[in-house]
Image 1 (cartoon, rainbow, N blue to C red):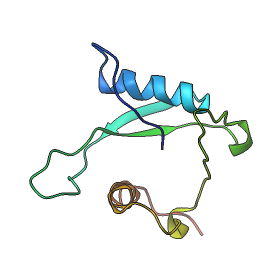
Image 2 (image 1 turned 180 degrees about the vertical axis):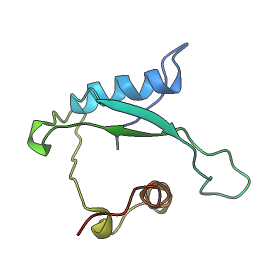
Image 3 (image 1 turned 120 degrees about the horizontal axis):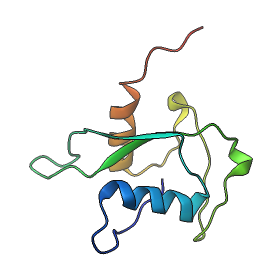
Length: 100
């Protein structure tokens, strides 16, 4: 999951678009911010974005020493940082049911 700090005067959306391009070579077809509940009670949740990209995993250009793999939502890897799993599971609950 790409991400890093914002540059001066950069919005969260501008930050994630820049990070996606720098770290994966991806320019998403669509992207929107998703409201999530914070992992830790009383904390402010992070900016979380959902993006669509019509590309194949072998087209990803991984930079900055990244190792990226794609997983189906029902087979997320273990171990996974609990805060990351918290946000992925929130987003997964919003997806439409899959057709058989």
